[in-house]
Amino acid sequence: MPNRLELRGITKRFPGVLANDDVSFAVKPGEIHALLGENGAGKSTLVKMIYGIMQPDAGEILWNGQPVAVPNPKAARRLGIGMVFQHFSLFEALTVLENIALGMDAKIPARELEARIREVMHTYGLALDPHRTVATLSVGERQRIEIVRALLLNPELLIMDEPTSVLTPQEVEQLFAVLRQLAREGCSILYISHKLHEIKALCDTATILRGGRKVDTCDPSQETSRSMAEKMIGTGLRDIVKAEGRRFGEPKLVVDRLSTRKAGHFDVPVDGVSFSVRAGEILGIAGVAGNGQNALLDALSGEVRAETAAAISIEGRNIGLMDTTERRRYGLCAVPEERNGHAAVGDFTLSDNSVLTARDRLGMVMLGLINSGAARTYTGKVIADFAVKALGPASTADSLSGGNLQKYIMGREILQKPSVLVVSQPTWGVDAGAAAAIHQALVDLAAAGSAIVVISQDLDELRALCDTLAVINMGRLSPARPADKFTVEEIGLLMGGVHGAEEVDDAVPA
Image (tube, rainbow, N blue to C red):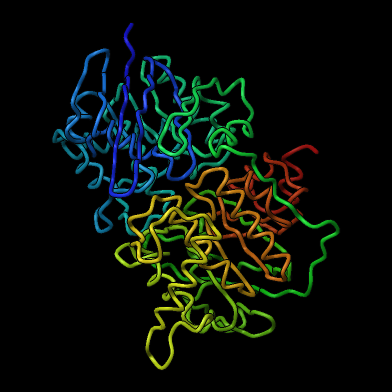
């Protein structure tokens, strides 16, 4: 039986960059094949050529043993190739159903399409109302649209880019069961993820890229997560180093019965949230996307003001009614989960994006004039310290890969040395080496006396990084406890709606 997909000598160049250099590998029918590599290794460029978004400069693509040209995504879908992108192509003013309809090559009556959408969502356990407007959805919920849209095509090859970032551990297992069933039925899956334990659990084969070249093909079941990560980065992987006998100072961030109002019909506001974070402490907040994380971050950052000044305080100063600029002056920095358009402006240079958040803290604006030199110098330091693959401070944000943009955004905020840092999905879409560097930078920032809140759906990240942990569900926050006192099962139950430590203790035997 011929390979479902085979790449032979694929090469792709951009000005100043050799994105893919003579890459060859094959995916068999019914095989779940991982494509691994650090940010900028060439994974996205490669799958865009498979899907017809780009054309290779050299080499050929074989489909079911026959050489093919894939001039555009429509041609790829006709062949039977579906793709779930890491960055979404959605119209915010339209509903879920309308967005999916626009992505279908054949016109399907709305009622029939909605029935098929609901069937796929039921199979995957992905709760989503087809009539919701995309503008009301979280990043995680938007990713679910892309998953459903791809599966509606009944593809022979399904390319999946970071598909589990919105799921609880229980839902990940459900998704894996479906993918395994698809594979048994003959569908090939090309799976891109930075969660290497997922690769071990799910994938039959892994192709590893580094610097645009294939460096290895391996059986993930015979590897460790660490060994695969080290093949990706070409060197040893750093462990998170925390000082022995760490002590926390006085509370720096205090949130007292914080509630927000619904911004739209489908918005999930926070409801009576209270917690405190001490100097030197990292508090993790776990939860499935769409349970009030965005409302919480917006309220903490100042994009949405609290109902009372005392609902949020930094070092004893009530800031609940202050805007984002005032809060930054008093030491609060924030990173939202959506990096494109929210955390960074794609058409702006990296220097200009630095001015947007660091102008007051680092003196980049004087008497209404931008100090371009200061902005360039600071941006250069961010690029160097966080190993951002960019041509320099004058590069536009949208010229960076998703992982490199995330490294820039995290570095831009961390190097401001805030008193309080609130971040959402700090390592979403970044490779193991970059995630380790970001984690260490957060630990070092806490060790210097900052209070940090990390909102994440990556439970491994939260358990390894955080000192204390709480779970958000439908806008309510569970009591915070030491992170090492939680089990994955307990966190999963809380993410699914069991509130309160006593309930979890009753539900899960010690």
